[in-house]
Length: 244
Image (cartoon, rainbow, N blue to C red; front, side, top):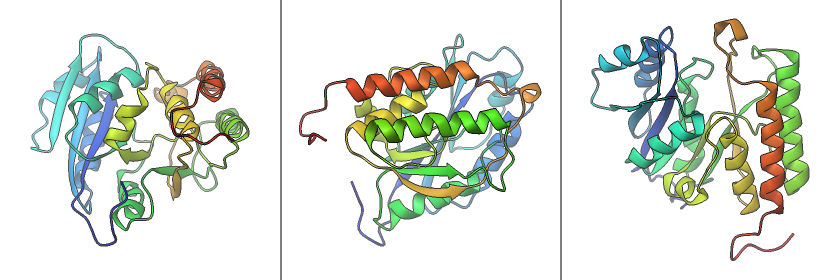
């Protein structure tokens, strides 16, 4: 659904998966709630079986816009997002990790093309230019996975693995994402591209943390992403999708 220019009656569900982030979760909530959003928001936080003090900190959250859901055991980012989506009440959704790598102020940039009727799906593109990055190989891995998607689907997107993916929540539900871990990023993009839905991209800021700070993604997730993209490319196309 693309809204006409000037229409702003949208509620945005910000979905925050959390796992063992006791050092950052308080700041993550504070930053997300401090933004002057151009629409109504809710913050749906899923504590994915944290074993540190994350749950206790979340229990002290005192804002009517925040809802906390707890998994009894760690199930992975994809599973946490699925729970958040099932409980979200907004029309649109965006994912915001709790690791402070992304700036929630940029969410307004993602909303702008939706609110003025230019786009339905918007990705935040990390250029890795003036931004801090985890490592050379992390950046190259991200670019490599993105290139695989572009080749397989004859598309041209700049950042497949970005956390900032904003879209109608009913669209996300219709994708039926099954990946329980970080593979959900590739599955979401692969299924969108298979439907010939091209994300509108806007530049965002990014500050990567290192492995010693709790960085969880590894090279194995990159290999899994390529496998998922290949699987989605060879799957049968949804009804009504024109052949390439």
